[in-house]
Image 1 (spheres, rainbow, N blue to C red):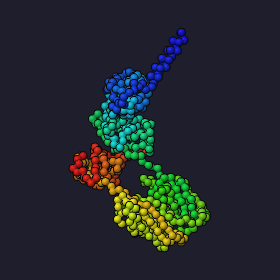
Image 2 (image 1 turned 135 degrees about the vertical axis):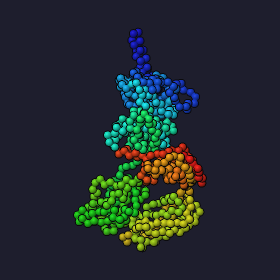
Image 3 (image 1 turned 135 degrees about the horizontal axis):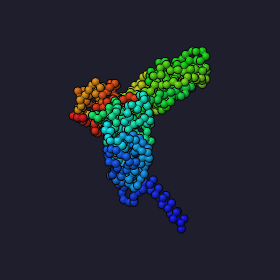
Image 4 (image 1 turned 180 degrees about the vertical axis):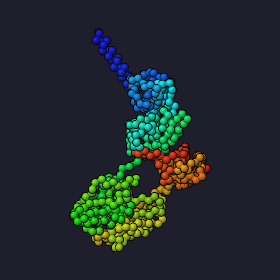
Length: 552
């Protein structure tokens, strides 16, 4: 009998542990509740002084998904704590004595969710002090991002920064989250100077991952004092690619052609031609320069360069005379990490020239376009006939063209239509490559599509703000999923013409470096963003209409 009671007691203790750790769910039934949870009771009271307990508690209006709540706790300054639950109550216990004369700021972020997935509409803040007074510094601000999910904001004391390059996850910082409208606040700060940064935690690890997550920084250091409450705005930009492309491979395809492969897609312009690439025979030291290149849009990591002379079977050193002229798609210049050596090829060049593109897209019916061939042509002997067939109406138009270089023809077709779909027929009886080889009875077909006519509107308005042009040129930025547009502010008036239909947020800012765009700033090294003057609410632009007399 005694053994029976012992086993029963162990069972009860084990059950108690389970109830303390797991989510305790109410009886199910009916439609799920869609109202957000609230905090209905907590202790100590907000702004309590002389706090000397080892525990605080928070009671919720609903049954909570406990993991989401625990992951949304931010304690400023950070301290070790333990979590216990009892029904809808959460207890936060401090295993060690709290430091004296310290103001604590406990934040429950907006990712806290109930069992139906409903989240807080705004963060909850509880301030208390182990001393006789509460730190009263305050920063209020707004973050702007398409979706504010998982956005965190840090206030970092400037004195914590050893230099201008630092890891924001490893220095001391106050942390909070914005509400559903992007508004955030830091309460009970020490009087000090701060920088404020915000980021979107896409992978939910509660840390900023440089280069993969949206990021923003305020426009200057913020002095928080007894008489100053700073209100700031932070725009979050998409991750910036700061990695330079490198050459990953280079080899001779045949006696006249070298193919170069890059680590990422690159920008190709005609400036590549003029002695940008150079090869030197490592034995004879003779130098050679290509006269033409091709770029296949379907494989934007590769280019081919062509040489007039037949390359020997020697080993060549490939060099680039100006790496700044080769960039990735966002403008990072090429980086040469190692010496590039390659061997010549004995393969003859017997491939027939052919267009590299089989499909082309035009933004407007008035645009010209070009077709690049896979190898250079003899432009004196090769004669093309180019026809444009309207697939929908089955009519044919002759196109005009000219060679813009040895392997590219520029084409102009009159009377193209918005949303038109065409077949471009390129024909020649005899096609001559640059080295004189002839190819007979050539017919190539390329599909051409013209975009839909854009739905454009405009807006005119007045910026209601005192302007200080010593901070930069006042400008307006209109932001939406359709794109970003800019215009200058002249005597507080502005006008944005021909912007795509959609919903926009207007941002007035000082263009400090006068480059015509908003600069979001960066971390490594620290570079502050340009100062924001004002941010509007949502403004709708409709096709063919001008929103007039907008005052913001």
